[in-house]
Image 1 (cartoon, rainbow, N blue to C red):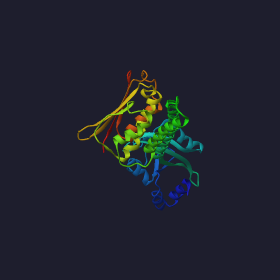
Image 2: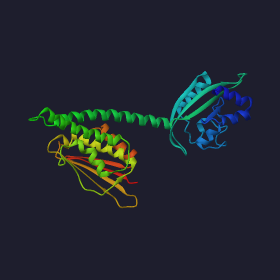
Image 3: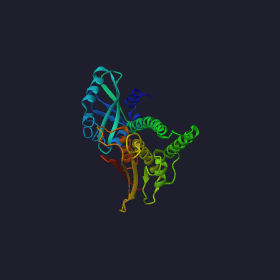
Image 4: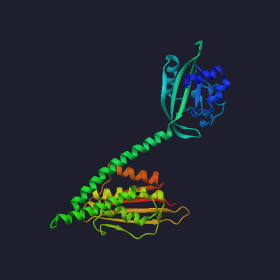
Length: 329
């Protein structure tokens, strides 16, 4: 049954048709040739939390707080009536009363009565907000995957260059390189494997181990014992991996004299928060980048959206300093 069939039912057997239409989950409106609301489905009232008195007999552009009074939409709906065309999935992004920001897809079809004495329009509304959010998250994941693969190849190349080859046999070089490569794989397994109970210090050490040859290059300071919640493991692994990757490629770990220190603390107030700090020194001169790269945006996205916290990056001349503050469960 299409929209035209539904409308015919509503005209011929209104009471029965209205009960059928009220079962349809998407909001439906019937507009007259002046674009006034003539009939409404129950889902429209439920979705937009309005009453019949606020809806029936009123122009669609006057409904609510005027959220439908959009010049482009008005032009399109007027074309439907006058030119017998159709509007399919016209996107309206608006902050609706009682709903917040939503992306609505509007479809409109011109309808005729059998005697062609008047013209009406059937309007359907679909809330596309969840699907748009899933698309945005999928785009972020694809971009993150592409970025991670690129960084992974760069790290493997850097490990191959930094593994000493002079005065060593091929077997010694191979064993040294494969040892570091295995540590890198372990860190990736930790970030993307099955989540479970793990301490913060263990997470830090296993994640950053592949990125520094020797504990004097990357120092994990003593800190309070913290058992991470399951939902915190992968996001924190991603942040640490991104910071370590950047340090190897551009920061303190890209030169022999560079050093990274990792330390953390937990506040003792009513809503305890974990403050994790990443401090670099001894590396190349640091300057504020002109634009935020994908890595910086990824760290901010993960810290705020996934962990519900915040992140502060300071590009000090002595080295990058990062503080991630996230609420503890």
